[in-house]
Image (cartoon, rainbow, N blue to C red; front, top):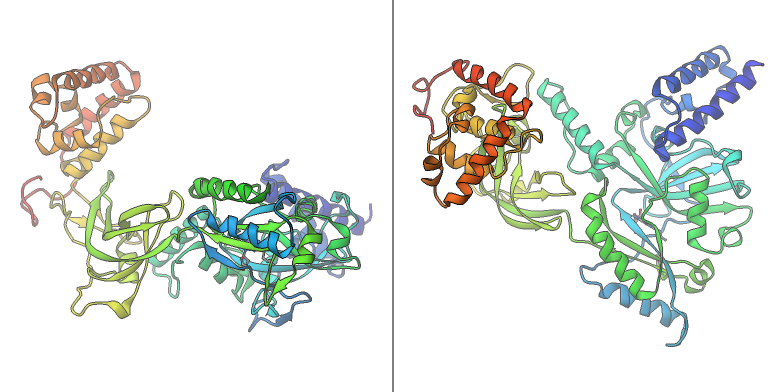
Length: 555
Ligand code: IVH
């Protein structure tokens, strides 16, 4: 086989495996095998630089850093959709009524069919393919003119560099513009920020953490150096098209759903939540369903979008100014809100890690009332410069713990004091130390520290193998605070009287706990753990003892 045809074969294989891995989440070969094929292609291309093509998988991160982005005039303007905040469901009914009126449909005419979609919270992107090859990616800009961000977009594994002729069920148009949203998944965002925090702790200059996945995605897309963009994990969802030639979309597809399904078959990620629904009741049900599922999604959405399914009806409805009459977006309550900082507490975790936590005036954000938000560590608290009395932006998305993302400095009250980490543990008074290159302060009190003791006992009680029924955080708190339980073995020496003497503890519940403890003794794991724990508790804590610092008695 000639090198040229071998190069072509490798490219096809790598395109296919990238699609299986990034889009379908169903890899057929191990990562190591993918890497081997990739290196083989790299080696062949190194021998034949004349054969390197922009759609080669090796070219995802190939470009040089730019001075600026070049403007791109969109062949078809990128419109926005009318957006309404709709926490009730009346918006759906109003939209359906509006559509029926514009179409001059009478009361007894059939219900309108819609496609209901998620409204992704990222940035709109136009991907232009010519004869199946990605030639340009452009941001929306003002809708008429965007910016050429092709180099950065190429680094997104989910975006095909080439649409494979074999994978289509419809002849590929010569020109195909796919429109959709570039976004960052919540887990990728958390991991990126964690990395950034480590870098900052290690002394890296000019680094910062990102406020939310949308900002992180926007920053990555507008990054002039594609090598940096490649380290910011982005994802993509297709939701429409721009220019299609020679035959327009209306001649190729009869519905929006058909168009989405074709994009999917051509290798583009389409959200699994898209759904054809009928009439206003269908829209309302979708709105409610997604409101329930929103927290569990792996990415941020800020609402849902309804689109008339029939492309012929879309054409009849047309546009008002810059918005189509056939689509509307309904937003959910925001995942970011303003509130004030009432205080800053420092909490002690099981391993002694000290975490500053902002106490907030209660605020309804992301569907729940939030009163605490983590400040992570000293560097983060300093960098954000959160002070008591400050007005702050709080973010809560999905199951992620609420976070203070920024401070409205202009609203700061005079004399607000800078936050400093305590040098002693706020619970036991032992020294708190931060080792070189570490982001966190730790209490050195070990199990002498009642906070660590509580957490250790709880951790033990909640291990699935042991599971001591009824031993929750409130009870552990009482037992440790009353000095009834100082060590894990103490737990197993608990008598009925000691338990009954506690607040709100009836004899029956006390007996249940004693039974549960007795039961847990017989699991081999807890027996092993008890031996180990008895030995642990017999040892003195590592560093300071009471008397050497602020507080002198265990709390
Ligand atoms: S359709 C003519 N569908 O919302 C209709 N847009 O104002 C064009 N967006 O920034 C847009 N999810 O990037 C459409 N499923 C979705 C969307 C969506 C998010 C964004 C879009 C634009 C804004 C529209």
